[in-house]
Length: 495
Image (tube, rainbow, N blue to C red; front, side, top):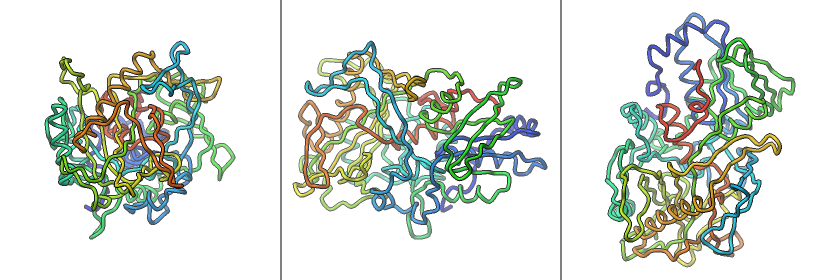
């Protein structure tokens, strides 16, 4: 199979199908989200009703342009080739960072602080938007503890390319396993600290060529069905609850192409969006929603030597593997790194981590203008992670029309930030054979050749990480409490 063309791995149960089919009359299904998940779920709905005499209307509502019309969107060098114009596929989300009791959080660098602030956080827009703009091709790590192990494994086998670790990657993984007491495994279902010896990359083979797996063929197939309505360029979306049925809503939207409002009544709304869009839409619609505890995301970019004789890791003649200029990637889950003299009192993973190396960092809002000083034999180590035990409250700020993120106390924020840096430091050590100087700093070079050091902040990232894409996708499809998603938060009752 060249790419994902069926929904067997997410096929609804018989009970679920009977429940939907019994209520199909006069009901519309509205899937909301500029995500890969929204595409898969729309296909799941279509598959549920395709053989029925009465088929409901299914609406998939997205914002932004349809980037899938670009014939090169699946190319492994798509991000590299479109680094300067990728903004056309991004949606800005106004975010309000709120400090607890107006405290000032100091980072490990004494001259750098985070104050209460507003900033723009960017997510992919349009159909398959999160996959289209993914700044490295997503990988599935050992981040899940779901009971649906066989279904997750079937999804992976169908939709990713399983690749054994390269020589460099195996050295890094082996060193890390020793440093952090990780079990080496091939399973993404992990109940203890584990590191994968295989990479599950969202890439597929098309004849003799490799392509990015963004599920474009599945999307194109959906456009051919008469009862599937795919809406793009949505600029206004309003949800109005049905006073007579707690499961149904009236959905009102308009688009740039159709400024007159369109109304969908008796709508079963299925939230397959990112959390920012979900909170904003409900906030604007004046619909109460629970405050959401979201695992904190961290990212750090570190310069390392391409040649590391102490470990044997050498990226000198290594080109990008499977797209995006990425020369190595590893995924693992772990507990906190213990300081000297401390003992581990739990073996339950508390961190989900992905780390990769490349010469250019496409994760910044300024495209690929951040790159390593290769003239001095450097490349970049980028570490991303989420803390399952450190969560922040997301809610709607109705006064400032923004998504509010409530930080915890200074001590808690600093403590977890330091724990993440210790994990990153051990990855650095596993690659180079030497620990980095602390506090950990990032050296980034701009396109004018100027390289500067700066102290990374938790909110230094400006784009949604592919790590979050994967967590949202598999958590929503197969059920888990690992990462909150709009579907699990909203408790949708009719889909």
